[in-house]
Length: 260
Image 1 (spheres, rainbow, N blue to C red):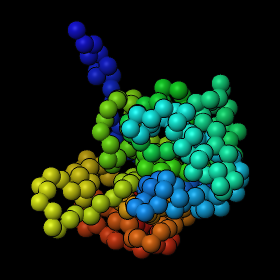
Image 2: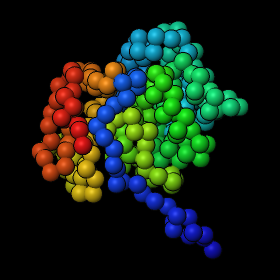
Image 3: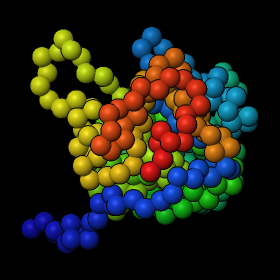
Image 4: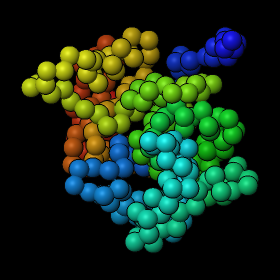
């Protein structure tokens, strides 16, 4: 018989009580997706990554495992993509002391895949607080897709299926809002009758207060000195509870767009 005791202890943490401040030491590259149409993996963003980290080495966290890829293969995929810009990639899974590896990293990159699996693994290995400490001490953080979800308050606006159960939906909470990567606009010519992304975010706001920024593919946020900048050619869509969504163009985002 299946043991249901786990479900008695499982808590979905959505009642977020945090202020609007972004730590001025935090340096974040919050990327909607690793691949866009017409480009190979990380090709469109690798120069930005190189300039952002100002280093030759990244500790890569492969725990999201897109399509079930192994840690080794995922890390090698990233190494192949960044090799020509002079970045060496080391998988976090290869370090015996993972907490020390995070705290002494030159830069940290958390890749996309399944957000639930990613967060569950980080909690199980006791690495959530280490990641917060490292970034609050100035270690550059790069996230794509699932790795970008983790920069927000919770993972409640991920697009992923809950294939595993993390002990909490609380994310790394570098940003005082949530991220919805791969944001899609409704297709007026589609015959699909399922929920749109906007509908799902509105459902989220029935029970949660924080703003949600929908990042379209090819867009990213660059966060430095407590300032959030939208980069890329596309606008982003900002959702606030009980308010009409707003389209924002590339540039510095005003704090009142995303404050709680």
